Amino acid sequence: MSRSSNHTRIGAEQQGDSFRAVEASERIGVHLWLRCRLTLFQSLAAKVSEGVPHLQGKTEEALQVLQDGLDECVRWGELDVQGLLMLEGAKLEARRGKTQNSMAMLKETIDLLSGGTSLPLGSTLTLARALLLLSDLREGQNTTLLNLLYALLKNELRAFGLSVVMENGQMGLFLPKPSNIYLPYLQLLNQDTLQMGD
Image 1 (tube, rainbow, N blue to C red):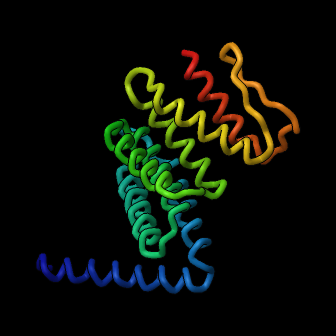
Image 2 (cartoon, rainbow, N blue to C red):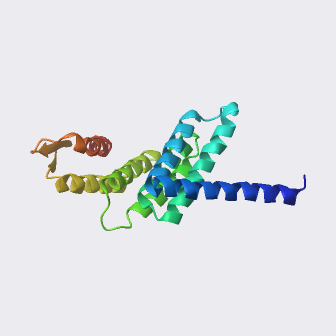
C-alpha cells in the first residue's frame, strides 16, 4: 500500500470517528459524551505505567483518547471537562516520568481555569488540584503557588459560609459544621497547609 493511500485511509477513519463522536454527543448530550471520554481516558491511564513495554499500545491509545477529548472540548466550548482532561493528562505524564510535559500541561490547566471570573465547583477543585500537583512537581517549596491555593480554597469555603483561620500552622474551621460537600476542599486545604509548614 502506498504512503498516500495509507494517509487517505487513516484520514477517512478519523473522519468517520469524528462523525460517530458528533452523532453520539447529539444523542446523549455533549457534557455526558465528554464525561465518557474522561472516564475512558482515566481507565486507560490507570493501566499505563512507566517502562512497561507491553503497555506501549495502551499509552498511545490513552494519549489519543486524551487528544480527541481535548479537541472536542475546544470544539464545543466545554472548559470544565477540558480542565479535568488536562489535569488527568498531566498526572499520566508525571507517572511516566515526563515531569516537564506534566508541568506544562498543569500550567495550561491553571491558565485555562483561572481566566474566568467565577468557576463552578468542579472547576475550582480541578484548579486547586492542578496548583497542588504543580507545587509538588517543582523543585523546592513554591510558596507563591501554595498561597494562591490557600486563598482559592479559603474563598470557596467562605462562599459556603465557613470561616478558615490559620493559627500556629494549624488550620481552623468555624461553624457551621462542614457537610460532605466541603470534604474535597478540606482535604486539599490540609495538604496545602502541610506543605506550607514544611
